[in-house]
Structure formats: structure tokens, C-alpha cells
Image 1: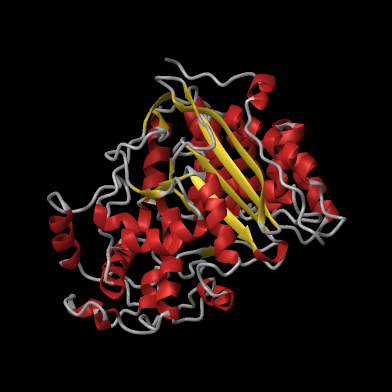
Image 2 (image 1 turned 180 degrees about the horizontal axis):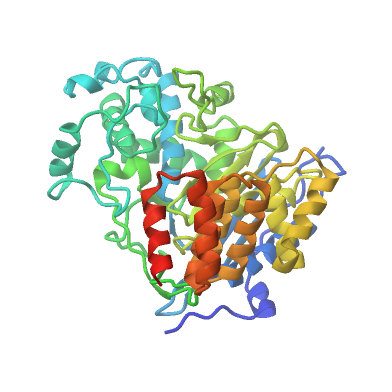
Length: 487
């Protein structure tokens, strides 16, 4: 059956909401829960409509309690089954944050030293792997090759877990340990084996006994598309998108072989994850004093600070800082420690990029929340229209001469518009980037790419020539330009 999103009033009426009273002693100047919840529901409805998200769950924690739970849309397009508060979604790489908590539990028990070499716990490893530290594993600075193909998401090798392990252990390191941040799944496969050995039980049982049960997570466990669980949402993605058509909605079934499930094998509900966050913050799972250690990012050998901490990702900003993770480009969560707020957002659309909404949701619950520049720009454009993009950017720059819109973030936003078959909006974003970064080859190349997709060959050639003047050695760009000139 074709996927259609309900009209605004009908959808908003279907939202399942649970509101708790503010914590005793909470600052009176903070936004009211009721107003914040309404704003969050409105924002998410707009996002579901604009990005054509089939189903979604959200949970917000403030001052140690869940103040908002929302569940709407469809969990299964074929049957029309609705998303409810009990619908199970895959956590994907958000699982790594739970693995980080498991690591700190083993540290607290005196069984694990984050600075120790991995060979202390797993002696039968390739020689080049043995001096990699546990901290390097958990912060993705180990230099290990990836056991998972990043393009397909499947294990490398001829097939099966043993073949994948043989294949990855035969590969050389991709960098000297501690010198480069490189996200991969091998790190967590290894750490899963360490948990099995140190906990003297499977990591799945260890997570259940030490995290799921104490936090009251009734609907959370390990599994993938092959594991039948009542009430599990089906995952989707848009297939064959073009510049004029966002594509057809198809299944996005993902398998997580058992050996990789400390990296991306959990599934559950937004409310369960919210309860887990509360248990982390109030000291039921790890000592509160150890949170700063778990959330301290890796520092590379040259002094570079990465965003990867012990299982979690961190932010470098000083205002409204967060820690959290995204998973599968369909789910994300963030904890704002100084603001006593956390947000969990789960969807069943691969490519939904829910992490882009976390700050905007948190801002509804924290007075004076400072949105990052590109997030502020995106929010204003959503309210006032894309035709005013440049004017809004200029207004923000006049109000704050120090504001900066990072080119990479603008580029990511523009390509998200392209994937949604909105080339004119993408062109507006890339044009803004080009005006802000006139010497950037990538900004000019992005402009040329959109023009080439929409058939404006002359404009595409002009933009590609500007880009090639900056990077004359770019053979791929030169080939694309030559093809356009021949047309």
C-alpha cells in the first residue's frame, strides 16, 4: 500500500502523551512542560511530513523524570499497524553507549583497566593488535581494520562470523594506534569478547542483568530482522531517489550477527532508553563520579581532541553541551548534563537523520538554550521559507558578527535536501556556502552538481571550472567537466 502521512490535526490527535509535574525545586523560569511538549509535537509532525517518516517515538527527560512520551505514525506500512509506546525500534550504533556503561561497570569491579593493552584480556591476537589499549578500542582510535563493510553493512570475508574474523585478522592496521580517529565495528567485536571473559557470562546476559533489569527496561533486548518479536517496527528507506522524485519507500532490513551486537545489536523503545538514561545519571548503573571518565573524549598522539569517548560521542561546545549517539541514521539520543535534560528519538526510516532535531527539542525545555548556528538557520528557514535563506543568514550574522556556519554542515544539509528531491533548496544552501567560502572548491563543485542534475549545463560548467581552478589535480571533477562540455 502507498505510504501517506495523515493530516496535521488527525496525526497530532493520535499522539500518545504522558506528562509529569516538574521536579520540586525546579527553576520557575524554565519553560512549562505542557508548552514544551506541544512545541515538540508540532516540530516532529512537521519533520515527519517533510521527510516522509513512517513512524516515530520520542521521550524527553527533565529533572530526573520522563516529562514527554510520543508515539505516532505506522510501524508496518503493509498492515497499517500503528506505532505505540510499546513498539520496538532498532538502536543500531546507540548500543555502543550501553557497551561504554558495561566497560565502566567492569572498571568499578576492578576487573578492567582502560589503559591496559587488549592482550592482557585476549592474548590470542595478531602481534600488531596486542598493544592496543582498551581505551583506544572504545574510542575508535585503535587503528584496527573494519570487520564490517561500511558500504553494505555486511561482514567481510567469504561468509559467516569465522570467515570474517579470519579476514579482518589478516589485514594490516590502517594507522598507528592512538594517532587517528577511525570509526569501525572491530573495536566492539573485540570488547564483546572481553566482556564474555571478565563477566564470566555472555555480554547479552551481562547487559540484561546489570543494565536492562535495574533500569526497568521491559521491552529492550538484542536482535535483528531475523528475530521475531511482537510489536517490532519494520525499517524502511527510500529507494532510487532522483532529483525530481524522492523514490519509492522500500524495506531496509539489517542483520546484526551475534559477534557484532555489542556494537549495534540492541532494540527497544524510546521510553526504555529514557529510563536507562535516568538510571545512568542517578548512579544506579555506574557511580556518578565515573561519568566524567566515561564521557572524556580521546586525545590523539598529536594532541587532537576527538569526539569519541568510552562508547559515547561528545560535543566540543561550551554552552548546552551534550553527550550521546546516533544509530543507523534512524535513531539518536542526547543527554545535556548541565541542563538536566535528555532526548531520545527513534524512527523507522533509514536516512531520517533524527540527530539533527535533538537540540531543537531540548531547546523547548531549557530557557536560553543556545542552538548551534546551522541549527538556528535551519529552524528559521523552516518557519519563514527557503526563499529567505540568504536574508536569514545575513540577519543572524548582523546580530552576532562572530557567528559561523561551518561549510561541512551546510554541505550535509544541502545533500539531505537532494536526497529528498528538493534540488532548488539544495542549490540555495550550496550557494550560501559558496558566498561564505568563496575560495572553496567543494562549495563550487556542489553548486555545479545541482545544476548538472537539473539540466542547467552552462551554469554547471561555470561552477565546475571555478572548482577546478582551486583544485586542478581533481581528476574526477575534470572528467565531469569534460563530459558536460561535450554535451
